[in-house]
Image (tube, rainbow, N blue to C red):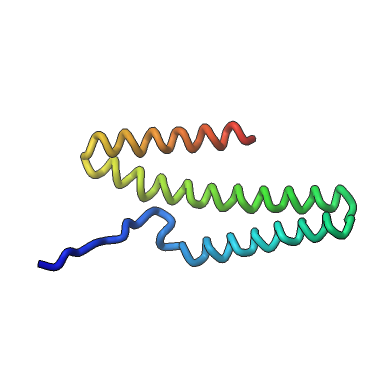
Length: 103
């Protein structure tokens, strides 16, 4: 008998390639900040770039959070599995609380 294994899909799975590209761009921004520091650039210019990286990461996080709600949490609620629904709901609330603390 052949065992079939499936890779779990998450809310972001359909957009994974685009998300990875965004992460690479953000990584490039961070490397740019490193070069700015190494080249003794003006403080405000560095802070401006750090703010841009923070905004880019926050935007990416909200995209993944949105996908999580629409796929993972909604799927757990629709499944009828009360334990899974509770777990996903608690995870969601914890994630939102983490976002609220960082602001």
